[in-house]
Length: 349
Ligand code: GLA
Image 1: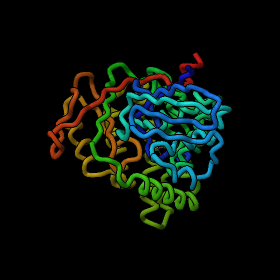
Image 2 (image 1 turned 60 degrees about the vertical axis):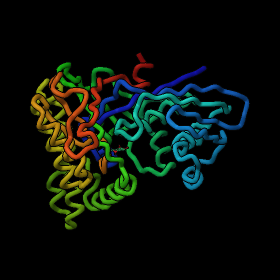
Image 3 (image 1 turned 120 degrees about the horizontal axis):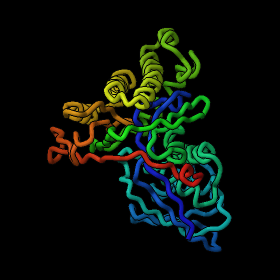
Image 4 (image 1 turned 45 degrees about the vertical axis):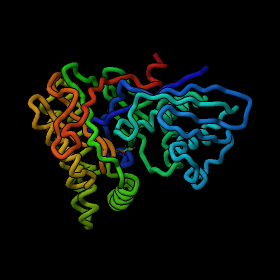
């Protein structure tokens, strides 16, 4: 049976920059979603997942119509249905989805699923081409995301983070030193406001870009020219974050983890104060990690509004759990991840 897979990802630095033609430095992680496709001469794709009880059935010629896709039940099937609508497989069959990626924990299980399903249904091309299709599928399913997640899921290289310039869509592999332990801690807070909050930030950045041009290409002098104080803060975050991505990539490549960690802390502050996507639970998780000896830096990762924190630490500095006051049981599981291959990158070698 043909199978394809997609890894999860964590973004080391550079959040809310991808839809602004800015820069980010994500890495693929060593946990993945696998889709096996049992083709059959039928007119539907049946979607079955280990993670959900409900089975979904999607016509192979389903229209790529957002209203139709967003009305589908069960809800978990909306993104895969959108992938089917764009991939237009020649035959139907059954797609079996298996994953060791926790859903909703900030490792982008959705991009891993979209990329794996697109590949097993016969979509081919460069990481950018596959990522574009997956981003379009997310938009059809109602989330106006950027290219960050599917692009790293397809195009990362093991042992490296992927420096992405979203203005040119060029990428560069940046080695992750062996003594950098990358830790992801799920704050435990579900991202209740994520969809609405994310769309609002995209709209605010568009409003700022209408005045000063794409924020990823803007400089500090453009930011001060923005009259609206909210748009000015949003723009200041994006402009500063892109500069931090460049500095972080240099520091990582030089093995200077102290500098890299300090940039992560600045990034979190900017996401909290200027971009306003942090929460008390994310702030507390970052503070707890930073209080552990041997932790170089920590920040919220991904969209925010709840979700996860990423830290870079000396090996052994963070154990299997992190004590966080005010959480159930007083501690949160810490996941130690290694930089892995993207699925198209490993296929190309
Ligand atoms: C989510 C989106 C990405 C990106 C991040 C914030 O993970 O899927 O496209 O915008 O938020 O950096």
